[in-house]
Length: 329
Image 1 (cartoon, rainbow, N blue to C red):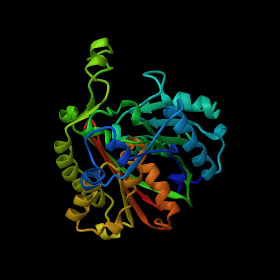
Image 2: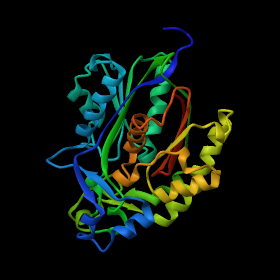
Image 3: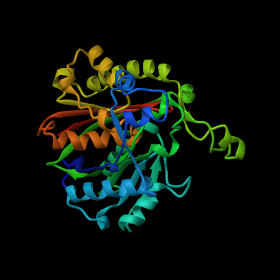
Image 4: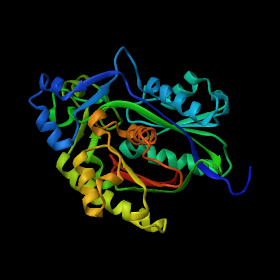
């Protein structure tokens, strides 16, 4: 390969389950209303798996689309990195399930757990493996079945989450979408802002943990909202400075789709129009690791990304973790 080739996104794909769970459906399950949910989150509906579908199934659909887009076969894949907080099993990794299901027999496979920031974390790892020359072709996946760990008796959380998957192929290229930088951050002191209380070594699964509903997503909504607005705003500024670009030079910013009000607050603080971002949270809710690659795929199909554009990806999630990536389209 030529020396001036660098890690680039050569293919993108996404997949959403067909079943829709609307706000009106949730009105029948908990004390909430369509108006209340939209006012606070911007979410109108979300997609939910059915018929026994699991995270690796969603990942496989997205992976095939990304590979087709890149013009590669499963045999070309050297490494699979999946970001998820809803793995098929505690172990083995969901990436190993994906490797088996798509027939990528040459690929190494492992998962990353950085919650809603996970796709950016996984992209950073894939980028560095490719740039180092260790591998040539990496499949990076963000996939979630959040409906499996959502408490549908808790109106504070059940209105937020949906299922889906997105994937990209990362290879060295001169003509595709060059990954200019990735930046990763974390603050473990806020670990309990967004977490699942049971199932790990701290609180192993037991009759008591199930009865106390400890195996569902728990989060401190107001605290997370405030932290997210401040952290994401600073991350955008830091990333622009690192890449020596002005905010006005950015063609499009794709945020993790957690809450429309967070995105609006960040864009207002940055002094940028909402036209500079892409939002699909109204259709899918918060899909954690999957939200950014799904949004990338949809933004591209909608003609929001043109050759030469500067695309910035920004995410924040449990951990707390956050990160960004800059891509020249």
